[in-house]
Amino acid sequence: MRKKIVAGNWKMNTTVAEGIELAKAVVAKSADVPCDVTLIVGTPFTHLCPVAEALKGSKVELSAENCADKEKGAYTGEVSAAMVASTGASWTILGHSERRQYYGETDEKLVEKTKLALANGLGVIFCVGENLDEREAGKHFDVVTDQTKAVLYNFTAEDMAKVVIAYEPVWAIGTGKTATAEQAEEIHACIRKVVADKFGAQVAEDMTILYGGSCKPSNAKEIFAQPDIDGGLIGGAALKAEDFIAIAMSY
Ligand code: 13P
Image (tube, rainbow, N blue to C red; front, side):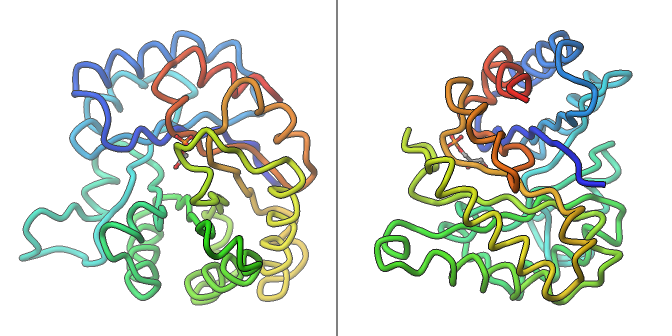
């Protein structure tokens, strides 16, 4: 069954104390959100344990923003999927464009990260999206198709039950520019077809595909109304509990 999900990606924002406060504010308002909408907050590694505590007993689920491509050992500064899972988080975001762009995340690394996340029981929010040059050159369908195939085609149909795809056009992230509902829908439909081609129609039908990129309370309703858009991955607006919840209530 396809899920509706509204997930926050806090990125590198908030101190631990601020993060706990934000998580508590999200929990306090979460009862207003329809029960068929899954709420997830994605926090920095340092915040996972205390935020897990703040979310206890609530419907809000917890995600990391990344995990290592190695299982364990001498990899200074890295945080493994097993470590993420041990905090109480049940998800990790992988392949965010900021990771691809600033930290050299390659498809090969993302395959390893996805393997380890799934092996440790984490759900994966796998991000794809074209940059402005690629869109202007008319390559957006090819870029998201290639990004999706390069990583997810290494997995099985059963694995896909634990994977959510987030389409995040890089030119819309943090810019205030949102893809139009039509632009987002046509890419989501394309991604669903790429999933269907490898894993079959039922897996594609069940796949949750989120939109990310300047999603806010004022535009969420129109975006979420599209048939292939199953929710959002929210950056800036997730840092304010009332905006995050207002987006989740746009269903
Ligand atoms: P903004 O909502 O701030 O544009 O960020 C989107 C994003 O990158 C979520 O992962």
